[in-house]
Figure 1 (tube, rainbow over the protein chains, first blue to last red):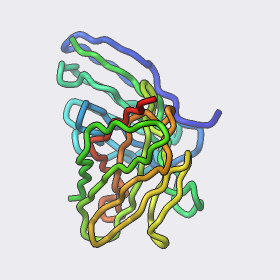
Figure 2: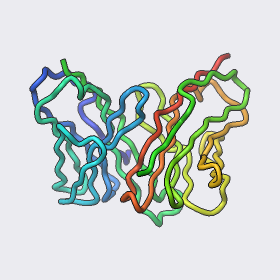
Figure 3: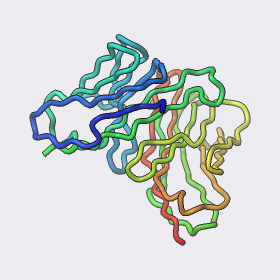
Figure 4: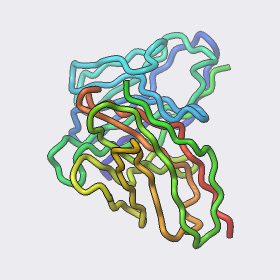
Amino acid sequence: NAGVTQTPKFQVLKTGQSMTLQCAQDMNHEYMSWYRQDPGMGLRLIHYSVGAGITDQGEVPNGYNVSRSTTEDFPLRLLSAAPSQTSVYFCASRTPPGQGALGYGYTFGSGTRLTVV
Amino acid sequence: AQSVTQPDIHITVSEGASLELRCNYSYGATPYLFWYVQSPGQGLQLLLKYFSGDTLVQGIKGFEAEFKRSQSSFNLRKPSVHWSDAAEYFCAVGSKAAGNKLTFGGGTRVLVKP
């Protein structure tokens, strides 16, 4: 089924460890983004990409890196995990404008629940 | 900067009763407005969106929302709630000026009583 696939679904890290959250979409969407979800704060934008080779920072980028070497993949790297990065992470891709009812709609992955101890 | 406020953190409603979730946004020009629903342990699903035109927008699962520019609001409504509507609901705003990035409200958790 077409959509956004995130792996892993769950992860426990020790403080200082690094890891990469994977995100892949098969809808040929140019725009992809990473959000973190914390209770009472909704979703906050970490990084986003408007196409292969182009990334930019969102609202809460510190401690995270991204790259976009292909249209399909948009991995999120935690360089040195901290307890403050305990959260649920969502990747999303956006249908381009001009596609009727689907235009500008975001498709979200099912999330990665990360705990940093 | 654009922002979204959802004043109600929790709402409890009886099955079959009507539901209204409030959303207020802050943005100078005409925003793009969205409502998403998140079931426990799941990602977000788009319910409906508003870009322009008719201010009353119909969505999936029997939901509708009304854009009121004078009140900077985009409230979500459903005439008769089903138990399966128990979830968390997020309002979001985007705009061309903000690079089409979405800003989300804090969410409203809906509990449905039998």
